[in-house]
Length: 183
Image 1 (cartoon, rainbow, N blue to C red):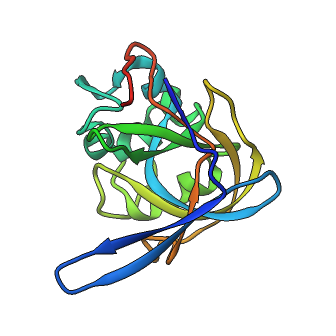
Image 2 (image 1 turned 45 degrees about the vertical axis):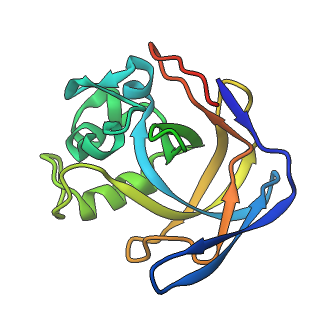
Image 3 (image 1 turned 180 degrees about the horizontal axis):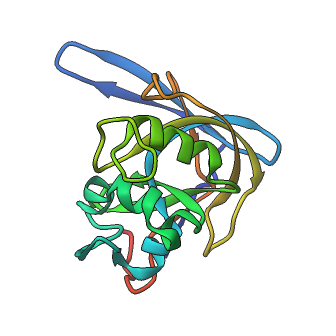
């Protein structure tokens, strides 16, 4: 299942208890430099349909990215060598595959700085690794593959992209053994 976004740009207004903010959402194109923020997941766990180190948890389910361990991303050879993808929360409480990266290197370095693992980590995050980074759009993806990004800089100290959100061209709502419909 896939969500295909075709609108050019629109503004989303967020109302909070004492905060009103305007969020501009922009469509992306190949060659564009964008900012991305979301949960990091390895393709090996995505293809399994459940987490490698917690097989009772659906990879794209409401808890999947939250309980996915940094140990899995950094220490498990099948996970660290598979392409990383960025997951975004969907309206039904599950996660969709929004972006994939052409090289894991910069995200691995960031995970080692901020996470807990046995292979050179110095941080304190055990599960639910998120990343915010600058990237160049290399490919818009397809009905089965998220758009491809070249990570240019990871923003470890900035947990968001400011007032602009770049809309993934397609959000894939399936993983290896899990298929669901998006309403």
